[in-house]
Image 1 (tube, rainbow, N blue to C red):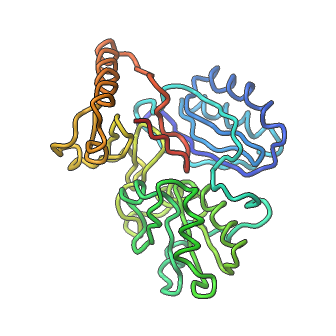
Image 2: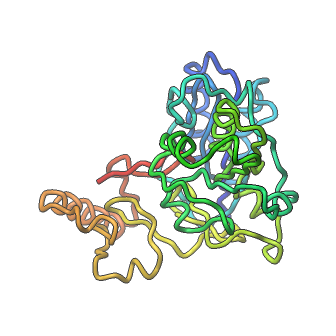
Length: 316
């Protein structure tokens, strides 16, 4: 039985004093051996943490002791090894960045749909199903017949809506994302744009995979996650995808076998952009990683982890 608990969480809540929450939260995580990354902003909290059962429960208890976060919910999965290198608590303007001032899920938000009711909704031919995640996530897996906005960043989603969706034509729109947070912002934005019926998958893909049997599932492929596991399968176990240590793109086994893929250096997605200077930097970093591995140590290096839904950090 895997011994590391991974908890993905978020909650929109008015946290006007969010700056003062950082240090006590970080101290609680570190004292309980919990790693990961959390974002705090005036609009709430978002992130993923990992640790022992007792450690994760202590941190969740600490968060819920704040009355504004008392009903905080989270999604759990399990793994054999710690998927994070350190613990970080960051202060941000938004806990998920859409970049549209005034969009507030606390004021208006789409209709939540339980995982058990999701299949019936998306099987309706009148429903337009939209994946609000980015194209590198969609590439690994998605719901059957879902539209891919082909975005590199969630901030591009409003442009996609303006160019491809029409509130007069698309009367019923269903959205989904990894854990649910992007859909809170997406559906709030779409309602502000005049869409009448907008739905989103409560708890996101992770909750759907947890609750819906694979035999009944409409999900195809793996689900990208924001830690070193890269992706999880329908059982929420680590999948077959790995990560390019050069550009941070997720890679299938076939892409790893490509002649354009060099461990720690480049992959089919970044090989064409590899300048001599960039190659030297990546070769040195990979050398340090191999030395650390030989010493059975973690090589932290630069800030290059992927932690938050909607916040993929590319480091070239």
